[in-house]
Amino acid sequence: MLNYLDLFLVALLVTLALTPVIQRFAFLIGAVDTPNKRKVHSIPIPRIGGIAMYIAFMIALVVHGEINRTIQGVILGSLVLFVIGLVDDINKKGMYAPLKLIGQIFAAWLVVHVYGVRVESFSNPFGSGILNLGFIGEPLSIIWIVGITNTINLIDGLDGLAAGVGSISAFTLFLVALMLGRVEAAILLITLFGVTLGFLRYNFSPASIFMGDTGSTFIGYLLAVASIIGVLKSSASLALGVPILALGIPIFDTASAIIRRLKRGQHIFHPDGEHLHHRLLLSGFSQKQAVLLIYYASILLSIAALLITVLQGTWLAVTFLAICFLIYMGAVTIKQKIMY
Image 1 (cartoon, rainbow, N blue to C red):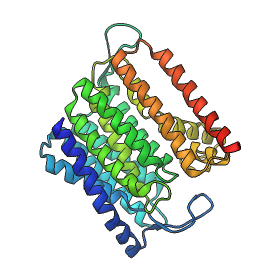
Image 2: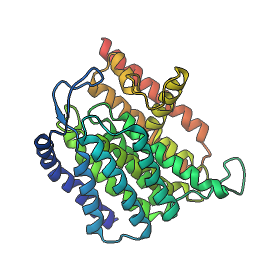
Image 3: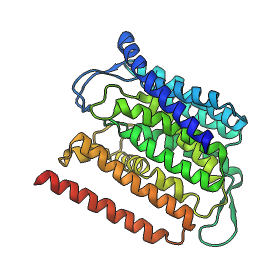
């Protein structure tokens, strides 16, 4: 546990020290996010905070020193996404969406095909035995990585939202990795936890810097890859349910957005103002209240993921229903406080 604590502290402290430097650099090169009708901020804010997160993450891993082949693959894949995100954040017009997607697919393919980070089988949740995925394991792993990478990017719409949800998910999956003895995943996740928590110091409302695509896709990619290494490749029953719950809010929001856009005949990447955080703002919640409510829901879903890991699915239905009820009651309580 001492090594994990060292990783966390290095990642946290380097992020805290480096973020203000990147903030000043962003103003120098004009990499700032200007207000528009889809934005909730009213002043220009630096949007390349992901640089500080990425550098802090790499410094922590180098200081730790134990970089094996799997972690090397994760580093290379994340470097691809870092470059893509940085180009997108610095370019005022952004990067062409299909080109970004191709880059994300390549980063996922790199870690899956070249470095072997893939799901090859599942424990049968409806009985005994193992479900072997065979040749479809590789494409399914790539789809998972690209999908989760984009879920974090899509929820990055309020101050502190992506960083906070990323922190909660990273710490939850870290605990699961510890329970299952998945050291490589635990290393990646505790480092990511330190980075996101450190960045949250500057990103929580009112934010003084945004992470941009450089940060959000980096977080999503690491969570996706680490969940494969730490949970989906294990023989634990209901392994698929654990990362789905730990990443429940971004997965739900992205799935809802895709369904909504397909029903309207729109492209799935067509931007709109109807994400979960937008709907909470329209319902009367302030930015902080909306973010804290989503944190609350994420924590409850994460607790469910931990319980499933410990109980191995025995109380899956009861746990899920209880979590849904608590989320609903929390939303009602907060809404009543606003009204009265």
